[in-house]
Image (cartoon, rainbow, N blue to C red):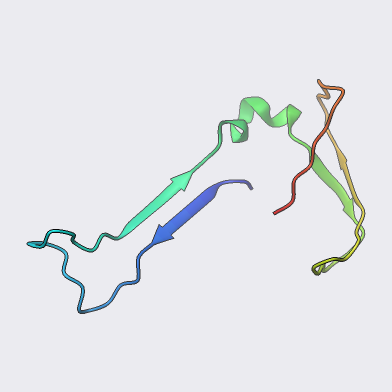
Length: 80
């Protein structure tokens, strides 16, 4: 849904967590971008159809989407 979750470190029984200059640190972070707030739900695009069930590098596909509250003359799309 667009939220970002980042986890780091490689836990190991030999790591030292205290009493050293640079202790091992285990950290998890979750980020929810402002545009996922429900107040933006009418401005968020919804996928209507996707031409391929599976995509691969270099493949071509068609994506259709709708936006119920269209407010700009310019739409940009980024796929990760």
